[in-house]
Image (cartoon, rainbow, N blue to C red; front, side, top):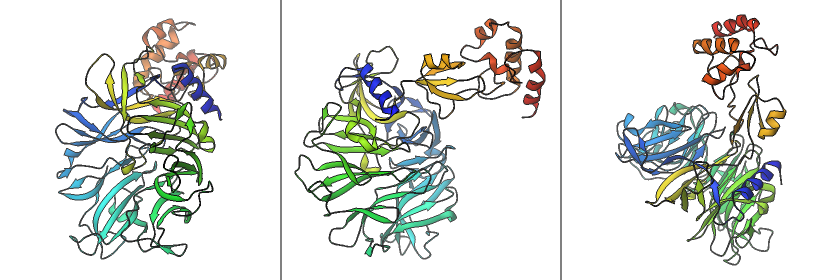
Length: 508
């Protein structure tokens, strides 16, 4: 068990004695009924993350618009492009706030990005001369903005789908950047991909170097798991645990090429559901995780592996669901983070404000989870207020951190406990905050607004003149660091910092 998992175990033990009826600290990103864009939120979809863990998702409003949420707010409303309606739940966001999702454009199935309509039904497909788009689905986006999706082609603008492909747009604002990754008719290990197959379940690593996909091949035992040019599992072949692979569902892969996939075997019905790590079954129906037995009928609702080889996975039955988190190499040691019936403490008082009644993760349109490395997990849930009220849908965040962001005077950040931060000479400690992206302020940013500009002049003067304890500065700028005024880095705030401050200010 690695250090992060030890932190998670401690966090959960503090939250509750057992996994059942726990009170879990969380926050609501957005909820059904919230005011947004002059309307109110009516539905939400599974959350995804960019490369540094900022959350993105598609939602709909009471006025029938769709919106794209990224990080702290909406970045797109469908009303900004005439003819846009509907939209799949699958989407993707980049580190720069770019996005891709799949609505209809004038009734034609499409993929739309921050640059506008990328491809829609009836359009010529740039890498396939003479063929036309017949559908577009399951879009995703890498941190660098490259976009992927599954699309169909037809021999005429209004024709039926005759083949399916995985497409990539290196520049999601330019249809001419679209290329074909693979699709029906391609031959892998002597087997041909069916042109009539869906092949919707895929994932591309953040760095774009690794690719996993469930492929339907033109052979009797047709389902295969494909990884980076080769097959790692085939329907009907042995699992190594006394049964055979039967079906494959969710797939995910990271920058190192470590991967997971889920599905069923042909073994007994009470133990056939599984999740693998690098092709080996790691957990299956019937196992017990952190005191929770995955009883007969439990299935994988969502799963994702990040670049630290950590895996988030949701298991559930018709009556109960549970979110787990573990090291991919030791998934049986996964810890329980949240389950139906658990309480959510969203105001930090240690008491439940809401009760979780359902997880809304939908693996039918993607992995249902997108786990990054910043110490947070985002999930879509249904909750009911403890004080009474109507059940509603929400995107929530859960911290995996038992530490915080320790900000040093030079602006760098280390993940430390409060005591360790003080002992190390840290200036500001921010609980339950990750160091990626860096939440610390740079030198000369004396008003702590994230920028160095003329608005820092008055607080710089205040830090310079308020005495050795900086009382006057702290009274005005609580939570900021007056030693950010030590612009010449000599360990003191004094008149010798004036010229470097002016130079820094005027050089921007």
